[in-house]
Length: 374
Image (cartoon, rainbow, N blue to C red; front, side):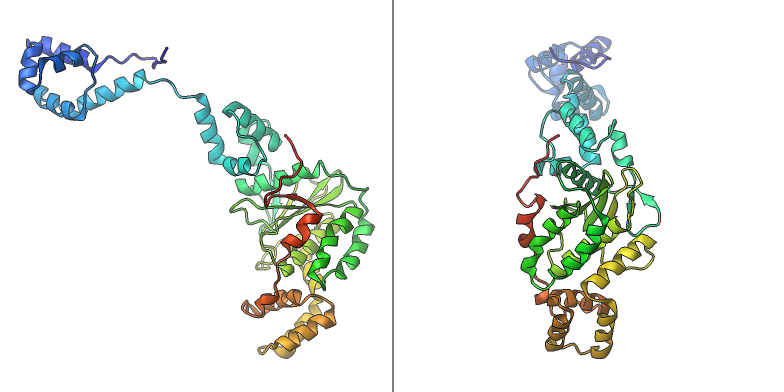
């Protein structure tokens, strides 16, 4: 049985019948006026046929009213007869408007189910009691002294990181071991292949490390959050370059070593484009940037090299400087490009590293789904 609106809407034929009675016309008279078969008029009055656009115009002329009047009568009647839509339509629209639902389904973070179950999954995913609460969680974000609300795609990525961290098993976290590991990591910076050892070294320190493919438009490079007073470091690897990898990694490690955000519930340090303009940054971000920059190439040595060679940088000099610093040339090139704003310099040395590390760490994305279930 079809659902109808609370206020019944009669078929337009009833209005026409009343008008005929008021004017003393018969159905045959109206058919004559309209120039159509009497049977056609009879079927409209009996409610067995609707009013077409052409008929609405003809009836308007016949009764000296606008054609829209009859067209609207027909539209209202049809709406009143239509079945009520699935309540899930409104729920899905509400969710998709506020959150990247389809992308989350595509990434297998949630399942494509009926609207009620979909809403339940989203509440569980975002650790919320109401949909309205999902985006009310505040995070400490780069580029601002204040706490801000992230974009929906950023929030979804971050909560996925939180989910994955809860299924990872690592030894008890040791801040001392993490400090010592920074020295060991330095020895891995000559050969891109050595990047594969990074996840193991961090795991031995009690740090949960993962690579999570970013959602479109999220523009997140990395994040440092905490689980049971142990750091969780996630990287998006959206910029697949050796210099960006080492800079972002050391940046997040510094957040961990400085315990940034550890004592704030659900506080996640979001790092969006960590090598962007460093002006007007919070003190914590300046500290992390400074540590990362000095880690990739000692700042004083890098500045001296630029001062001596600027504006003519030869490939031979750059390679010699990289050997002296015992790092891959790509790290020197990354710092050189950033400090001089000459991004055309030696770009071929900014080698890709994503496929070198993915086989050795917890991964979510790039065709793989982390073993996490709702």
